Image (cartoon, rainbow, N blue to C red; front, side):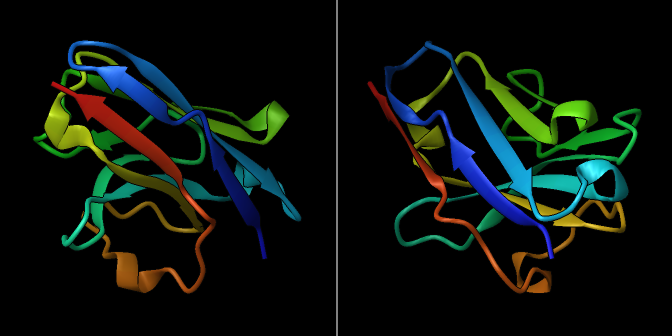
Length: 124
């Protein structure tokens, strides 16, 4: 089973940018579609971005479309989320996840385990 570790979160002012990283170990990411989820306080974990194993296909939630960019480097076993024009409503813990199948709209309930996530806080 692939183990994932998120990093790159922090405190940023509205309009700023952050780049999150997801490092994998235990298995090559080349076999997996990858996902970014986030969970704000008191809210359900939501899917915000996905990328196919090859990187050719990407999908985004409406709330982040045009501001966030998902990418991956299979040679480095890494995935990234570039977040621009951040808003206070982007404040959440961000998690990455992997699955052999690329399915936009998949639920967080379909993933049996999670890393610790990385906190993103956007001040107004």
